Length: 296
Image (tube, rainbow, N blue to C red; front, side):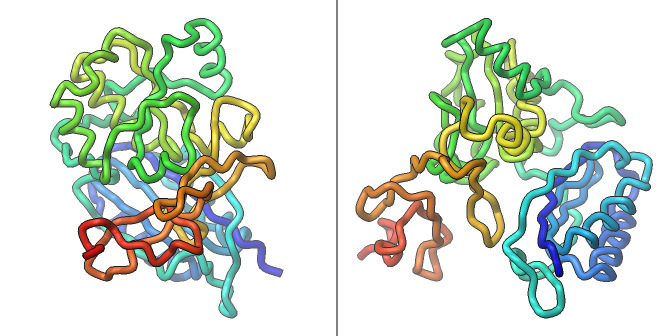
């Protein structure tokens, strides 16, 4: 019987021939019947794949056989299921592409990467080290959400600063505007789903004069694996596949509020107007709600 799983992974390392990596990963993924998304650039690889656990283990062995990818942190979670052909139902297809950035901050010229990863990023904090920092510094510690604002609506670290962002590209403009200059004298902990966005965000913040910047190593995923809902995290984790969100325990708090009626929900959905690409936190009963600019 198939055991559906999803892997989330990234690696920052110089890649001399991104197109060669693309062809390798496309051919490997197709041969194994995997589905998901991979982005490749001169700075590394970022991806998420779904399939049967045995097939994904074969993929992981092959991926890590390439020396620059050998130490890649691959995060595993349960998938929803597989179809009659044994392919993941959490993704519509396999997409493997070359891009200027493997996470789109719109600042490819600022990112510096060497064989050890991102240069100039924030200090890494394991989940345990994060708790130690909070115990030492208390309310001085600022959690800074490195995701899109929608994601934070259904789950975030308690008391976190959540920038008003629709896409990752909005962060550079907000940082350059001085909107968060008041945080430059405080310990700032950046966090995101699996860690990749904070690799870049923390380096952008450091370059702009934020003096004490940290990044949560392994992101919310690794934190949730260790502390579940009994630590500093509240709510559900938004994910970019058919699952929509995942919980770390049966007693996960529901902190999202339906845009239509205000009831507590972790459910998200696209605007029903096909010309609108906005997503909402919305309960099933209010799923017909439209974004304001299309309401008329």
